[in-house]
Length: 98
Image (cartoon, rainbow, N blue to C red; front, side):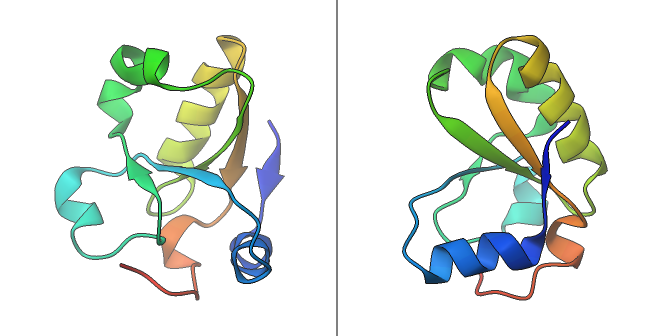
């Protein structure tokens, strides 16, 4: 499984890099703040929403601590998607939230 640090994600966003970020936390958790531009698809819905994702794009998977996003990353990798897990999740995120 490929991984990226929250610091690297923050730097890429600050540099203007367009990134496809999927937050797999529950809706109530996301309401407390998410990475700007992240799309919320709760982990339990990934299997049903994967057709909404473009297999030719890379997705950064995010959750609270990195566990759920790791499971989502492994699942989507197995389905042929280009995915990277953000280690440490939102607990380690020091950037802006919306």
